[in-house]
Image 1: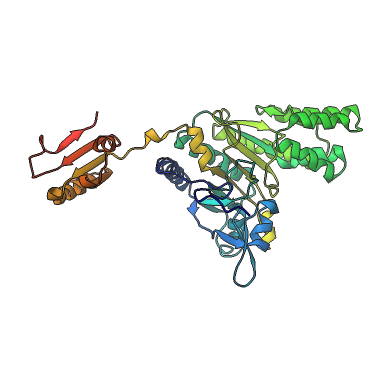
Image 2: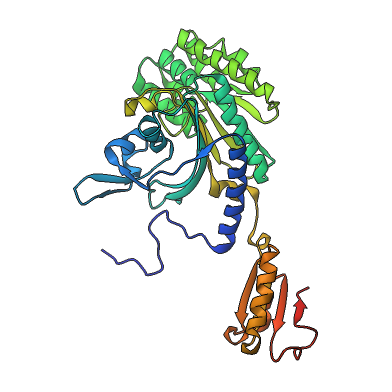
Length: 401
């Protein structure tokens, strides 16, 4: 086996340099402030969880889990998502708290990637979980909160697509006759491989009516009026209930005045299999893939022996930062004080004064700088305190233009 080069990182792992970290911190703080205003309490979970609990409940493919053994021989996993760990807490430590419970988190999750995939194996999610409320009001709240948080972060050109996994599952099973076939076409929808979907539909021994129903599924994307078109495709009570759920949700979203921010997408399928009802994804004009999403997962907590309804969302912080289109030039340190030994104490006092005013300040001994001009250009203002007091010409301050 070839030993990795000393500067290589494991597949999917990335460094976050100071400029990007500062940008992410700004976005993180803005979202946290907005979420707190909606009454969500912050929570943390361990990076390591037991495979037999979170590893199986998360609905992440086993091949994407990072596994290791503890000293007792138990299989552990790096958490692949945050919803399952919070469900564990809600069903145990927080089982006695009043419902509904509103929780929020900001944490890294880990999913192994194929070497040729190019996707991150570690990424940060910011999200909320609303546990114990089965109503459309709860679903509407988490959608409205995600939209509010994205806008506060500075994102303007985006839409939230809303679907219902029950509608998709019912229609596919109803027409295709078994779960195996339905799973194949669900995969096409998840990958947005509509060409493959249509091709395989045309090759199945279906009636012309059923073939037309499956083709029509792909066109069920647009304004709230799409729900009326969907009624003609569904024949089962389960399917009709799915549409009824969406009609109730639309009423809630209209009350939030979100008609311009959301669309209906009834062929929307999510990566996580624990979703049971309404699902949604946020798309920015700057990205070709969703930067966040969520939905209702009423059966997940039953895996922890405490069934109760729940809904929530997660936003990918790295993708949101990318969609905002900010660059490292947006982040600078305001001041630098470049000093000599004779004026160290004066430099310290000046730095304290500026920091107390809320400004960022770097103190740098002039003898530690290789290229004074190049170093100084990094800062908005440079204060030179060099030589004996008053001998460096002009009071010791030089502003970069």
